[in-house]
Amino acid sequence: MNKLDPEEKEILEAFEGGQLKRARGASKIIAEHQKYAEATFKKDARINIRLSSKDLRALQARALKEGIPYQTLVSSVLHKFVDGQLVDKAANK
Image 1 (cartoon, rainbow, N blue to C red):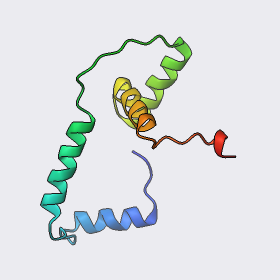
Image 2: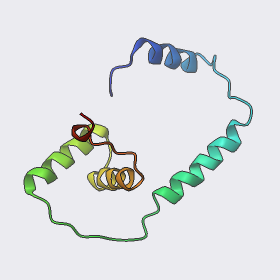
Image 3: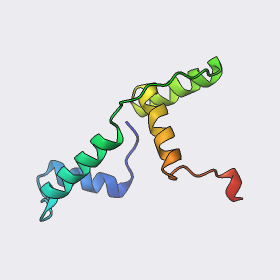
Image 4: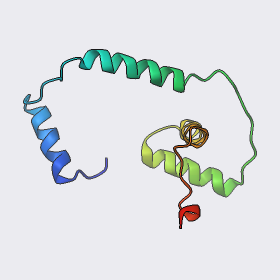
């Protein structure tokens, strides 16, 4: 697990101490976001791609570090790209 910064530690301690309360309407917001997530990650199509073994190993290592399957990582990166959320840092210099 990644190390927590002081603010994150404070939040975790408050959570574990039972000091946090849900905001009004939180259940509705959570349900909406669950629907968004299900729709976003619904896997109803299949593709086959060829990668270099070096890139595949790097993807697998990154996914392991993130704690997710590498195919999920690839799917997430592709989704972010087509959604315009992935930014090319080199292009913005």
